Image 1 (cartoon, rainbow over the protein chains, first blue to last red):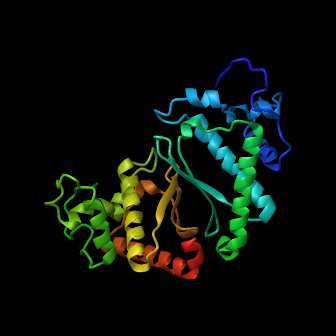
Image 2 (image 1 turned 120 degrees about the horizontal axis):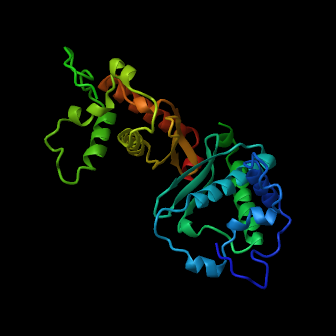
Image 3 (image 1 turned 30 degrees about the vertical axis):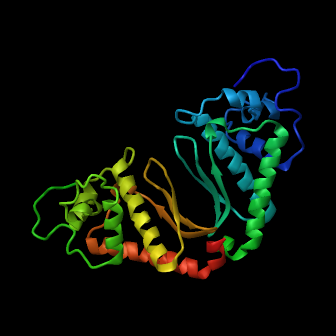
Length: 157
Length: 157
């Protein structure tokens, strides 16, 4: 959102991460006309970055921007696909986001809620750095995989 | 929707049903100003009735009427509350309805998907008779209760 010049690159270093790779793949899959072919991964994901300063400047009134909801959806889509690669469990995403910016997002596999996240201030959805984005995605995927391991029968029902 | 005169009462007899009682209670709970106090249960639920003739006349184009989505929500709210009375499991509802009228509705209790329904032609949501409405609610509640009995650990997680 902010276009101010910064001495450190915004978002920091791009980490080596299965989750980041999956998220980039999810986003590139939507680029049917190849208009993002020239963009680097960092450029594709730059809207996922929200620095502390930017966060302070973001209002949390009004309906959340559809672009934000799109990014939240892509994040959990990447979690679901990475989960499938690692465990074989296919998960579907559902969400219930109130227009005031709070809500719940779940990933469902068979009869199991493999991931359940309550969100708030979704107007400010984002991560300070690419490293934190990667960490959040990896943690969510690991939590979901743990849940599949804990209740395999429900996940396969 | 239709106001044509009919020889049989529209929707038929009102059955004795825990589900119907629960659904009526859910709807009356929204009537903060008592403006429906004078309405009978049959009148309160009359919009849940869609006869075969009415169904044929209902277009399935355009966004589903918000009133229909409200009725679908009340139906599953009643299922959730009846489930809680019978099993103690508290379930939250989530839905993902495409504006073309298809989608999925789930009830989640703990880590368990206690009920999962795929819906289509939601523009025509309704039941031919009150007896069929009652039966659908009872069946959904029983299915959910069976699922809680099958995976109690996930439901309590």
